[in-house]
Length: 248
Image (cartoon, rainbow, N blue to C red; front, side):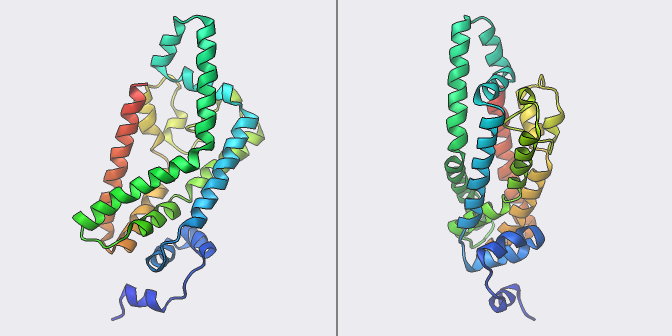
């Protein structure tokens, strides 16, 4: 009987663009090819370009001052503190917040690369040391970037919405389109619950499914074990984010 590894050996190597196409049409082909080569430059380059397009659209159609105003209004603790501050101090906080958001938005690809490297390392440790897998960090990083390609669709849709005339005062930088439950909750919802609800969305489920499949194929473990590892790490991240949101 021919094994998956034998079939992979007979298959023609895929180009980077073919990998990108197959992640939407037949993801297993992309992940099988990652076993041959862990190159991830193209999905990362696509993510960088989409990130810059989204950031530029926010800057042009919303403005960092408006984004900062929305962020401060939705931070209950910070909003209550500002109510007792002099107007000059409030204005200074808004300017500083706007500058920080602008800088971090343009630096998002670099920050994302560091977080991706950390996520790949943590998942690699679980798959190899706990579940008997045999992946490398470079190939797990490739799995990460290819698995998160669909998220770029979310931000491209947000760009379209911005140029179509979305209300700047209602725009949420962290949750730009209605692809998750958090988008439909009241702005008065507690930050922790809002953070959890924001993760309950189409692109999150899509990404987790792809990441689980890719981890199983590249590390050589069962799909069940890969799904457990990916879901556990994702759940830990979500809880940390919710906890941080509650303290803001």
